[in-house]
Amino acid sequence: MEMETVKLSAIVMKWYPDMMPFLKQDELDSMIVLRDGLSILDSADAMDIIQYSICEHQDSAYLQ
Image (cartoon, rainbow, N blue to C red; front, side, top):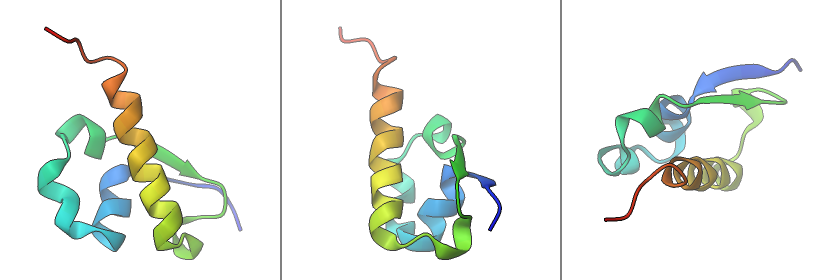
């Protein structure tokens, strides 16, 4: 299987659509490269990707 690039929103919509309102647009627009493609990604891996993406976007957040 070939690598596939998808937006995080595609992953969220497939496995955890209830999370959509809680994610920021820049998080949802993140491009994710899947080594083996979206079709064989399971829900546990999807959650790991979502959590990692949220953490990556928090690195640039400023505390006031």
